[in-house]
Length: 243
Length: 320
Image 1 (cartoon, rainbow over the protein chains, first blue to last red):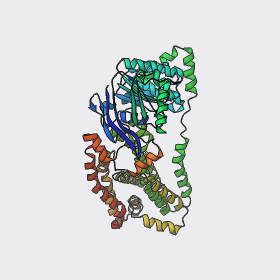
Image 2: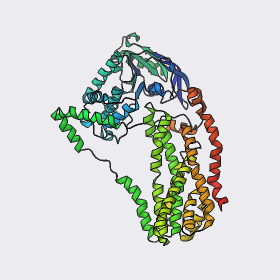
Image 3: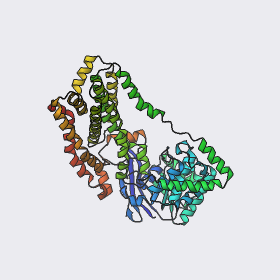
Image 4: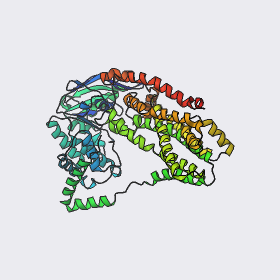
């Protein structure tokens, strides 16, 4: 799925969360959206999933204008917030089944796939446990099971590496994301962890104060002589510009 | 929107087969199953039982007039309370936050919440039926025929409350309705301790309210065969007859303004509050034809809403 943003802006009162963002993301890529707290990363993901409507600008998916009314396009993407929203009274099995149903995935054929994801996430013994009784990491893995089972064309995840998932869960997610990108899926995630962004992405999207400051491969970031990672250096320079 | 129980069942079956192939996993599963804590329903039952117990206690000494007054106040408060709660559910609830993340239409979400709203308001029927049966018994009226009349009256009273809740939704959502509701509930609670003459005066004051029409008809028309209550019967029927129309209007007009993710910061929330209704034009511009008919719907419902408010405010006076 090709994603195109044309001069997308979003304000909350006087706060400019996004300012004239122009961006084109091709299919089959893993893109890390990085930026300081309040930079506009989550707002960008919300606009891309129609949870927030841009004040100005347009979003296109495969050349088609996207908005909240386009349920057909929304069915081709999934967005997971950093605290996944769940119905705490539902069991893990029922929550995942409900999510699949909402995405139109029906039939018994989905059950083995879901079971495999639950097994890999160590959630299998919890299938009859209510989601409200799970830890944050387990809730995230439950929601992630639903996302992996739906396997939409565009995966969007807000801070998956700060979600409380255990190392096994994170490793499984990374493997699945890599395989998904190889199948032509686009994976877009936000993170504050620069090491992760450098090592686990095809491209990095740097947002600072609502503006897109960089969008390219890590290899194309300007080289530096100092200590620390390339991205750390970029962020240090951004802070210096502010000062 | 379906709960997809069949798929959930298939997942459970497949997962259990997988679990049974490993002793460790199966033991873990059994352990988790045993430790599963059933949600305490005590709180919910307490909410239902409290008014019943209160009613029972009051029944020892309170007059029929006080019961009818309390029912009227309770139903009036419920209109505002339920309308406010419904608006909150539709515009700033965790349910909305969840469904904003999945590919369902706004109408699907409304259709999911509507039956829940109806079920939640059913306690009005229960309260009204209890009061009407109690009043009939204390009047020494024949039991069986009045039991049916009490049930029918309770159903009408419930429909009046639901209709007025829906009519409130024809106006832009006012989350303060909830606060108005709570204030009237508080007045109802205080009324229990009012001297008889105060209660009588309050009953006269709130008598013209639509929520007092059915209780008056039951008390004076059904039990005392007073034919002067007939206009109220007509008014109730007319009011309740508006429910399907009002429901259709509200459903069509949802959302009345751009839906905002409800778990935002307080600052953003207050900004949204100040701009309720203001972003419709922006929404129409952005979303093109998908929501182009919303302004037209809003214009069409405005006169109807004004008429309903007028009925609500003044209707009872001209009935007398």
